[in-house]
Length: 358
Length: 270
Image (cartoon, rainbow over all chains, first blue to last red; front, side):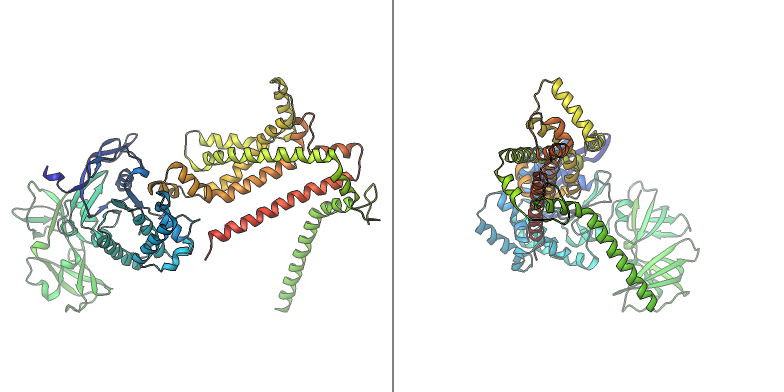
């Protein structure tokens, strides 16, 4: 019973097979009301199939989908109290901005003046000018279209709003702005948001909880911090972007040995039965130069290049044995004025050693 | 520099001249028909010796010509209505949905277009008599459709191909029923294709001769009458009725153009 406490959307052994191919494989998941939950996975991981099952575009071949205790499996998409913001937004090109937003209200038979009132209210809420009401959707910019799609979904007043990577086609800066805006809208509406993306970075900005999907299964669920600090395996760790990865094997209590160089490093805790795996150290955890001298884990190397990343500087350091490239990051104002060719020591704290099994 | 400029001017003039020649070649015969219909002479001579509108007055008064126009109009209208309805579904099957056998369907459904119309007409006539159906303008509607529906499917499919199926899914997801999706999203977006398909259906039926010849039985359409009068018993009513059918088609195309512009400006209003 404990598990279903606060369950809003509940999946039990949800499975979707296409012939012999299992796209979604016995997924159990509980999402709480008002939560911002994000599914992260590479293409082909089953996240798109999953969201299509949840909105009702496809029917699961097994398991149950319950919303507020009601089984949704056989309820068609147009009868479900959920709706989705599509990857390509699916704005109706023959309707104006206002008509697009009003669409779900028109369908449910709301009077024209009431519809307009609500549409204008939503335009304001989404920081769009009210006179956009009669503008053609094809005249709007990418970011504006994004907001119109969200306004249309909100006009439907769904219990859960699904998002199918709607930001993936936008440029970096706009995406960053809209990620935050989406989180603000989530806060303002208090609705349950379920988002899918292939970018853990995007998920971390917005989500209360993140689920990582692989081959139709959710391999790890947790808060952004939990996923970032404790990836359960190498697959999850790969989503963290640029990291230093060493192939290691167990070498005694809380110690691992780098297979390539034979160097030994301390780790926080070793999972039971760990023999081989990957040691992951994030670039920002690695200290360089003087500040590395007293750290428990150290490596010697030569600076190969440096890259300015705005507030931070990244170095590429090649280890003395020549078999490892290290990425090191420091803040712009931290003292180290190394340059290409300098011999340096790298070091990191034991708690920054992230050990994952295969 | 100067010679290059002069050269490009010569080239430009040649292109203009060529275009004018092509247009003249295309339109002089039609203009000649119109001129002939206003000529007092019983046979067409150029320049026109004396002008008159008497053939038009006669055409308007003639019951047989009214009958001809009425038959042609009835056939073309029914062909348009049925073709648009059938071809709309046919085009969705052609371009919108993925189903087993679609490739084969795409090929088979277009074959009648490339079939010689006279042969198609003859084949249909044989079928009608084998089935014991008396041919009349009703059977002509069917005969026209055999050839016209595939063409309209092709025309509508172009529009359907550019249709984004996620629009239908989005409308459905936002609570619309299948019928509401069709009325609110699919039809309005495909409307330009449906309208141009309808125009094609009408004009192709309106001007069709070979299929009508075999399938109208005792009834006669305008093109059939024009042909039979050319073969024997030419009267100046031939160019007159020819001009009338031509201007009917021209007016229809013009109206279509207006509708098209209205739809376009509505879709891209600023």
